[in-house]
Amino acid sequence: ADHNQLGFNLRSNIFQGGPLESRSLMKDSYTPDIIQKAVRDPKNWHGRRTDELGKWHQKNALNLNLQKTLENKYG
Image (tube, rainbow, N blue to C red):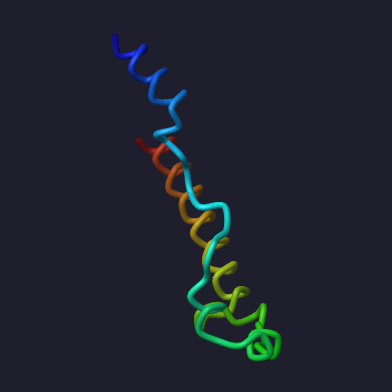
């Protein structure tokens, strides 16, 4: 019974999905020339440099591997 109802709902297009055209608050708020002038710095990500973030992840991975190794060796 549930499968029949689900099939009926799918055939009658009750689950229409999202809109075909997406809207952006930034694009609605600013003119196109402002968006084109915006400079995105790849080294600055929310006030944090990506290389610092990468270094942190690298140290964290080494720390996790060290903890696993010590746990396996000493219990």
